[in-house]
Image 1: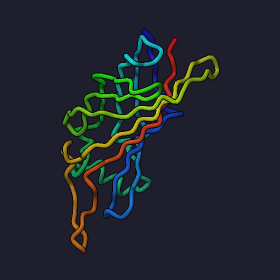
Image 2 (image 1 turned 180 degrees about the horizontal axis):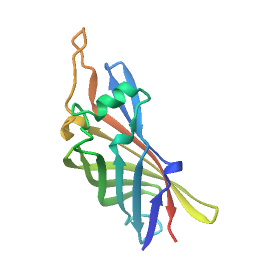
Image 3 (image 1 turned 135 degrees about the horizontal axis):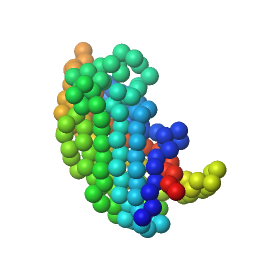
Length: 174
């Protein structure tokens, strides 16, 4: 069984949410860890464990980041991590997969299926590196992130849907 670890210097965990329904705000987590194991070279039997430190959230706005860490949203004092543990992987074609697993966020665990594109492999300083793009969408309210507010026109401040975009480089372990 081969083991792979995420290379955090060459990976990013990004989310996007509609703000005022007229624009999109992006953010990311800067501290995270992931491990993948697989017997097959095509990753069709891969098992993945991922965890993000919610206190590492950044949207390039200190006030907004503080609000996201507060009990209105992630409540990082009580729920400091987001985790994902795969339960199945389905090979859709040569380089595309449907990855299903349990996402735990804000004390709630729900099944989530993500789209994965395998971008290939190369060797760098003697270590085999593997690139993946992972995308998906969650409804934040399903995880207890229910804060919202109305605008002067009666609209909403935040969309319920959060788009996920992960660019991941995994390093094969010796």
